[in-house]
Image (tube, rainbow, N blue to C red; front, top):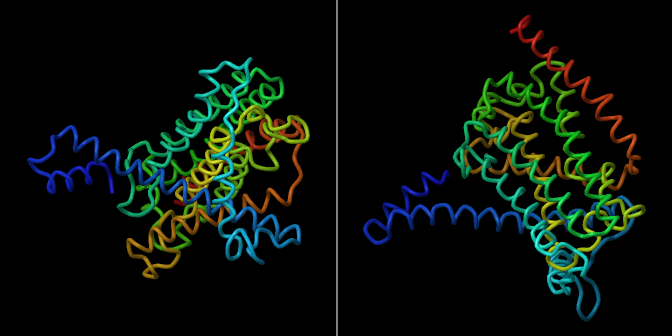
Length: 357
């Protein structure tokens, strides 16, 4: 459901009652509120999932609600809400030596970058806020806002640990955007489109028509993209910008309360965005894995969210399985391994397509 379609519906309902400009503003405001609500609910769910996954891997129970008095509800379902309320009720401290305007703006800027990425993600055949012709390029572009935000947070804090974290984050995200983008070029080459919906429709016809199974080179591109996405979202084993054992909390060291919560929410939102792009580009998007099996519009939303949730689960799993890399290892993997393989991969796909298609 695009903004244009929503505008047509509202025009029919409120014809003559509300002006055109007000209707246009309302048709843009409703999807924005829906996206914000989705991000909030998704954030609570993935926090609970991370608590449970980490507990299971460490052979613990995790948040549970047992015994008399205040507790986290049945199966600990209220634990994420309790954590959110705790953060929101904390005192908002701004260091005296900080650059106050930039310090205040940085956490909201990183959230805005994640927020506006959602408008180009197709949740179903007709459920997309803005169906851009350059959708995949748009998401790569607005995703770069995170770099500026983290540098801003590190610089504005006037703290050496924060600045180190911001500098690490900039180097890491800028570096890993290159192999991630090169991997997505393969998707664009095969589907001959930058439009997210067109890429998904190219993969119709069942699981073996998904781009990941198109030729032997594409699975390599998928693995490179997914690992690069881990680095771009600062997830373990690439969480050097906020490594607790070295930099206290990295770029977020001086933050507290709601601003600190926005950094966490933005990280989880970016995890969804990069996973959704992987699903659209390689795993058929909202297409059913079997032709004619649960392939209605409603089930399309289910398939899109389920595939994305599976990749997010892998991210959570890896966090509690792998140790953190050193900085030199992080950069070596990108420039000496992923970049050359990505370039060779593009030529491999081109040659394979010319010979066999």
